[in-house]
Image 1: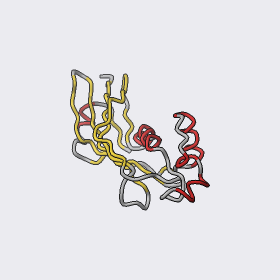
Image 2: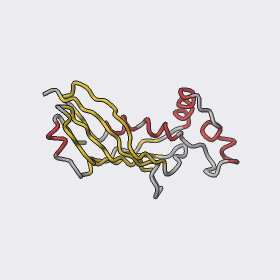
Image 3: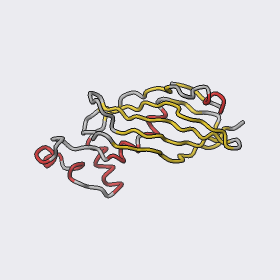
Length: 153
């Protein structure tokens, strides 16, 4: 895990890999709770019996947005950002879901610092993220996640 407490410390990682999170298992209970929270109960996510016979994956799959929603948790396993007044999720550029994440799969986040800008005292960091699936050549998704960090200087 890397530790960052200022813009300059962050900038030192420009163009470099920041790290890889530990593996995280996607379970059916979490998929079901996400379906409840988002009102997306499509059978491919929530019906293991139907998925076993009718899905090309032969099991349920996690919602793409469920995997995306794990970015903050997995990011915190890679980097400890301290000395902050505030952190803001600013956006995602170029997000592409490339591979379904089947139930009971292990995923992990790989992050690199693509760009960093000081906007009048606010650090805008663009983190290139790849969500890998254990045993799969293609990632679940790729994209550039943008954060605004207000360091307490």
